[in-house]
Amino acid sequence: DIQMTQSPSSLSASVGDRVTITCRASQSINRYLNWYQQKPGQAPKLLIYAASNLQSGVPSGFSGSGSGTDFTFTISSLQPEDFATYYCQQSYSTFKTFGQGTKVEIK
Amino acid sequence: QVQLVQSGAEVKKPGASVKVSCEASGYTFTSYDINWVRQAAGQGLEWMGWMNPNSGNTGYAQKFLGRVTMTRSTSISTAYMELSSLRSEDTAVYFCAREIGVSLVQGAIPYYYYHMDVWGQGTTVTVSS
Picture 1 (tube, rainbow over the protein chains, first blue to last red):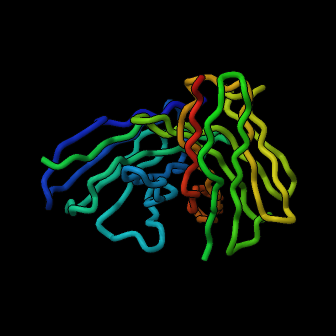
Picture 2 (picture 1 turned 30 degrees about the vertical axis):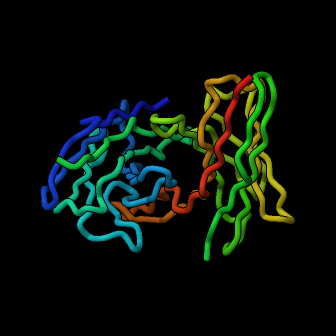
């Protein structure tokens, strides 16, 4: 299976901060990398697909980049509603895997 | 609107089986794969497997081989996930998700990129004696 490693596992930030999360794959996955946001008690929500494509309806403050094994997810200016857990997920393999998640907390 | 609606919470004893349903509406059920993902309390997302509603073909994560079965009923646009030989570690919220593919061109070559764009609300399964 392809292993996905996210860092950091958690971070504290203030409203207005720029936040960056990284995700590393155990083998090259081209751009088959998606990012999801999950708030407590809710289902995950797709934010970014194919490494850098913003899902319809998602604010432009979210962005993604990378290819191969190394990927980055960025929130340009953290908003109160952005405090949540973020997951990367590879779709290169038929057998999908998620990163362990990054919890973004209020400083 | 496109949505997936899952069945209600279940409480099962160790060794029993559970079958969770996921009813699709607002789109052609047979056009997109359904994936199942679970999440134990305070833990991350764990992918369990996929099913093609058109063919019935499935693919399961190694961890669940022999214990999970994914099926569907096309007449009622519903996917099912059955997990057997339940143990306490299977206590979790189980989600179904539609997986859609988008064609994007890279260097004049089209690639299909897959992602889970619509999720069910989750079904809590509690395994307890």
